[in-house]
Image (cartoon, rainbow, N blue to C red; front, side, top):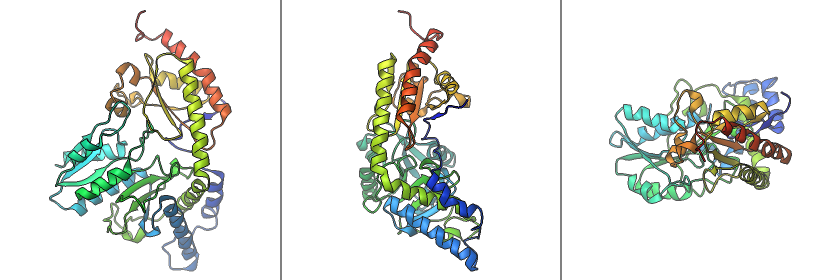
Length: 386
């Protein structure tokens, strides 16, 4: 299969050529350990600090507020566990949403087993939060509120600025998973009272295996990982230098043309959406007020995995909103929270674009989607009799 149309960028992105070039010296001859006393390692430490500044600039943060981690999930876990420790033993309640990434939801389930109480706030049919419901869920014993900045499945954006202000007034810590926002939309933490923010390098054209936890400067972060002094004692383990350098370069690339890229992605996303709606019957667009690159669409009466397999035969890479591939017959927890009908939720597909997506690729998908859906509906036992 020669042709590849990659529309699964919310899962991972291609390493940008500029990023790869920035990384190459640190994979070959600049291999010193940044913790070493000698100048060979010390020069690498300088490069790591420069990358820290690049990421800080992307987020509107201070360099000392940036902690490098291994991934977004580690950042989420670290933030949640740190907030609980800092809040003290009398605050054993957390508030989050029913549509968070598993890196937050599964930690909540684990904490529930440990005796903590977790409140999951729902969303409406558009995927939007009720801020009054969220506010009423925060109690005197609430240690942390965790709300993602944008949903990874639907692209729905949440009013993090308003939520952060609300949480601060109520005296709890606030954490946001910004993995899907960072590098796609402006973030200015100098103006938003966020305590912890997570991002992941491979979602913005940096390599896999590097992430960031933003920690507001007033917070003395207790580490999740022990055994080393790295990251000012906040995260033990020898730094992934090449990955960190790549993330810094990716942050700089994102800042250089963010508005232009977002406008282009939105145009292509809307073109894809319009083409699918025009060419296929009984479709549903999931989510409103979305990231510019994300389209989650449900096709009634067909299975998402069947659609994905037929797309894959054509070299088209997308993902399903259904969890069937993991052995469950339940649809996506996000679509369930949005009360998407069962007949549609199982046939949901997420297309997510990047700076490298082209008009020709979108045209190719629009050309082939109607035939795929029509073929699957002809053999589907779920199509109602007319």
